[in-house]
Image (cartoon, rainbow, N blue to C red; front, side):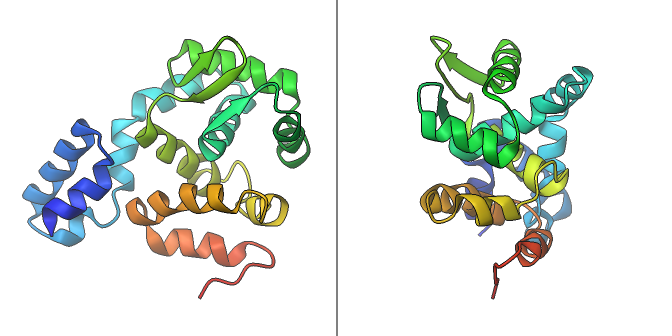
Length: 183
């Protein structure tokens, strides 16, 4: 059970696996690795500090948006329009922040046209940070503005969050999402 839980937490990242194993070994309980928010906060603390140091309100928001969509193509007019209308970030602001995130190696940018988060585990953390922990965007906008168009994307983004972070806190965010019933 411990190994299965550690594999779920790590999502292929060996360092996160070692950190989770150390916590489990130290506390000697499976419960100690149920909510690993603190583990992720510690692991990604240097990235979070670097992002905060930029003092740019859009940086973390853009990282969360990219984490949600997985990748963003500048030439996809529908997607870029959704970003502008739903998240109130213009294309210029989005790509300026994306360039900074690429320079910091948080995002990978290809030919100045497509961006994606450089690491899947980091993507999960950024999504959690933006939509649940710091609540830079209200989670309900994903439900109210992007569902059902991005139904599968929403499912793919939420599943690792539910498996990794405090389920009760996430459930509370679901309950607060207007028009959404969590049973």
